[in-house]
Amino acid sequence: MVSVLLVEDDVRIRQAVLRTLAERGLVVDHATTGAEALQRVAEAAPDVVVLDLGLPDLDGRHVLRMIRSVSDLPVIVATARDDERELVATLQDGADDYVVKPYSAAQLEARIRAVWRRAGGDDAPTVLRVGGLEVELRGRVARLDGEPLELSRLEFDLLAHLAEHAGEVVSRRELLAEVWRQPMGGADRTVDVHLSWLRRKLGESAAEPRYLHTVRGVGVKLVAPG
Image 1 (cartoon, rainbow, N blue to C red):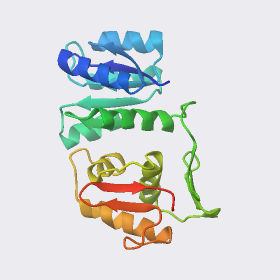
Image 2 (image 1 turned 135 degrees about the horizontal axis):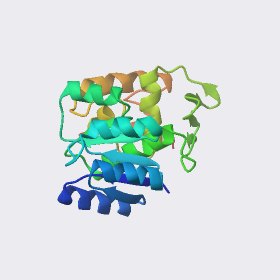
Image 3 (image 1 turned 90 degrees about the vertical axis):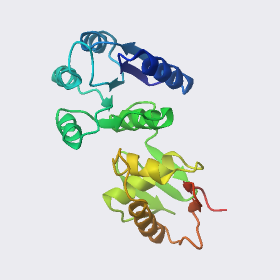
């Protein structure tokens, strides 16, 4: 099970996130100040840290830099600060991901599991199979019926995210956030174009889908043919 340290001083947000992440099978501890967070990181060594920037004693970016000086554990910054310069500076300081409040429990869980997987979490699957499709996450290789697929970086990331949620309808908004890292949203056309390219490489079309099925007005899902 993935252990998470939530660093959040807002009582309402903290209680809600602790409850929902625990319900989703994560082991969650919490800290309300930067100093307490640093102590928890040193003593408990969590798998992932979810870090607010607006803490009462230290700025979250300072806490992030201090964590980075002693550890390479994944850190997701979860904050109300939606300024692009702040986002870029925080990522440069060592954050693995950046999510803007308000966020859903499903989105936060997906981001936690994604950064944990990229960090080589032992409980994370490394190969995903859907029908004749095989997606090797660590090697970033995809195969269809045993034959390698020539995918761009974004096409692979798009396919990998859909494979991780095989059988589920994934919204375009989630794909923009998870694959394109656009927390403030973006153009649905971007997703549609890449889905079209991906379909061609899977030997299908929107009119005659095999793996990628559009659910009108909701999103897209990846399923095994037949």
